Image (cartoon, each protein chain N blue to C red):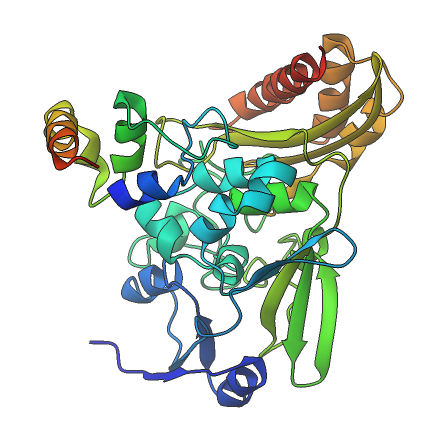
Length: 59
Length: 329
C-alpha cells in the first residue's frame, strides 16, 4: 500500500488524477486499506496504527 | 480437492493451441474464475494461464491506446495517458473491487468476469438459469436489490458487475480477439449479448476464442470525462448504479456526449438514446433529465430494485451537471 502511494497510484478518493504525489491522509488511508486483507482493514484503530507506523517509517 | 490440468501459455497462438479440444478456461488473475471454481459453479478440466501474454500499454499511431489483455487493472488505472486522456477509465477502475483484486485482475479477465448474482453462486439452495439452463430463476421473485432494470429477461435478471467495462463502453473500446480461425475485432458493447432465453451464454466469443487486447480510439471528448458509482458501502461494493460520462460543450450547447451505465443491465450499458437526446441541446438540468428519461423509458424494475430507475436518472443528471460546471471558466 505504501509503495503504491509512493508510486502515485490514484485511488477512488484521489481528487486530481494528474497529481504525481499523493498525501496519505485519513481518507486515502481508509480507502486504500478497505478490502486490503479483509473488509475490516479500515477500522479506526487499524487506520491509526498504520498511520503511526507510516509516519515513523520516513516513507 | 478439484483435479485439473494447469498450463502456461507463451503467446496467443500457443494459448489457443493448448486450449483446443479441451474443457479449458483461460486464466487471468483468477479473481472471479477461481472463486467460481471453489464454489463449483465453474468446473473446467484445464486452465490455460494467459498472464504471460502481452500486458503492454502502448499509444497507437492514430492517437489511441492499445492495452494488452494481460495488463493488470492497476497498471491501466495508473498509466499517465489513461489518467490524462481517458480519466473516466482510471476513475472506473479505482472504484471497483479492492486494491489487491485490482493488482491481480487482468483487463481480459475483467471483460470476461461472469454476469452474476448471489443465486448464481448458491449451488446448493437456488435455481439459476445461468448455472443450469432451464431450471428457473430464484432471483426474479427473490432478493433482487442489486439486479438489472434494463435488458434483462424472464430467464435472468443478473447485472454485469464491472466498473471498468462501463467506461470502456462509453469510450467506444474495441476488443481484439484471436481464435483457431484467425483474428477479429468486436466493439466492446457488442461483445456481450443480452440474456434472452440463454443467460448462460454471455458473450459472442466462439469456443476457444481469446481476448488479446483492448483498443481505445482517439477521442476529443474523453479528456473531459468522469465516472460516478453509487453503492451501499462507500468502498468495496458493487454498483447499484454507475455512470461513465464525457461531455463536450460549444458555449452552452452540448456538442457531443458519451454515456454508459453500470449496475443496471446484464451488460455494460451504452446509453445511446440519452446521447442522442443530449446532442445539440442546451446543457441544462432539464436536458439531462430528459436524456435520462429517454434511456430509462424501457426500464423494467423488479420488486426490490424499483429505486434504481430514479437513482439512475438523478445520477446521470448529476454527473452531466458536474462535467458542465467543470467545463465552464
